[in-house]
Amino acid sequence: MKQEKRKFLILNGPNINFLGIREPDIYGRKTYQDLIQMIEEYAEKVGVDVSFYQSNHEGDLVDIIQKAYYDCVDGIVFNPAAYTHTSVAIADAVKATGIPTVEVHISDVSKREDFRQISYLRPVAKKTVMGQGLSGYLTAMDFLISLAGEGEHKDAGHH
Ligand code: DQA
Image 1 (cartoon, helix red, strand yellow):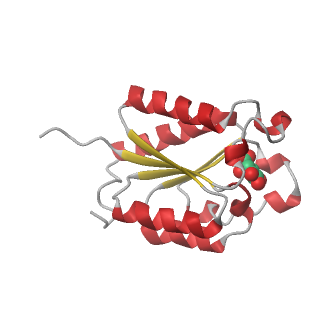
Image 2 (spheres, rainbow, N blue to C red):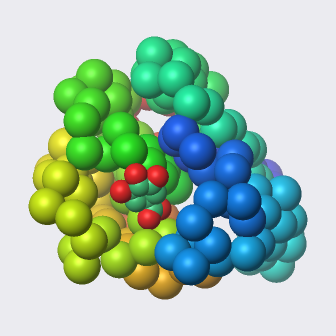
């Protein structure tokens, strides 16, 4: 039987839709559409299915994480943006689903303001990627693919 492609959700929080407009010295000049295109091309190359979601609303992000559970998503590449530093609800949702999740930040948050040093997501994420620009999303995908090799998927209890 042909194996189904693994399904990854590429999830982005507030203001990531403003890539290319917002603080280009920090986040670069590429747009959110450029990000999607880059990831789609990479997904095609490495043979995974990707879906995308971006929201500026905390509850929306919780809803989509819960939906990912029912949709049997195999991994989440997640840049919660500012909610990284504030949202217990989002971290709880990720933990609740048990879906392997990689925390991504375009900038190197470790070198920025004190309020960015807290991440509620980090303790429930499998890995954190930061400071690699947009290619950090691809690093996160590679990591999720490598987890599959260890047989970490399809046994999370939601299949
Ligand atoms: C960010 C870093 C966050 O501190 C910030 O609030 C963002 C983007 C990043 O990708 O570098 O909106 O997550």
